[in-house]
Image (cartoon, rainbow, N blue to C red; front, side, top):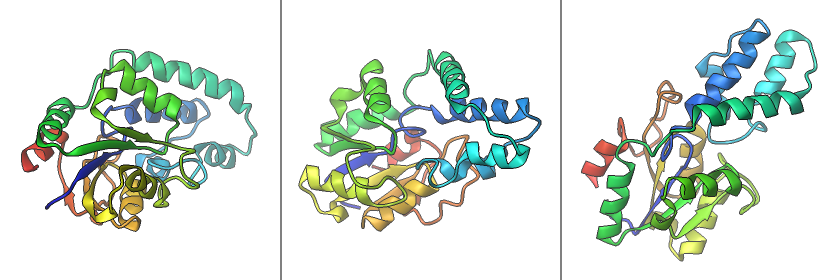
Length: 213
């Protein structure tokens, strides 16, 4: 496969943030007497709560309305505590270095905010590997819509077919395919149970993917 750029999703691909986020939501559900199976929670992975909302789901299960502001603050504090020592995904640095040496352009395309993504890229010294970061707000719609990936191709001055996308979620795979791009799936412990067969390839980690490139 020939391509000019690799477009990386962020959460769950470059950094394992999704497990801590899921665990925080699971604790919230369990505190109110309910479970939150991964096969239900993953509906919002790669997108946002417009696709599926754990908040709405918990309120429907309990028949209660919650003060989400306070719950969100406490949940976010716990997430950041658990992610204090989190580093890049296994194989991420080696893959980025290999792409750099090969002259393959690189960008991050995420449904998360710039504050979240750019902050992590700076913290883990990954920012210099990417010439562009496209996040929520940079295009009209987020994943599973193709807008963010279309915006990435536009900024790089490339045709969609020249871009290879690396994703971990069904919403991300749908977005990449709708944008006319090839996509390789690298699921993590949150998204491992998803049917990602629409992807053009699948790898257990970035370590194996780097060997293929």
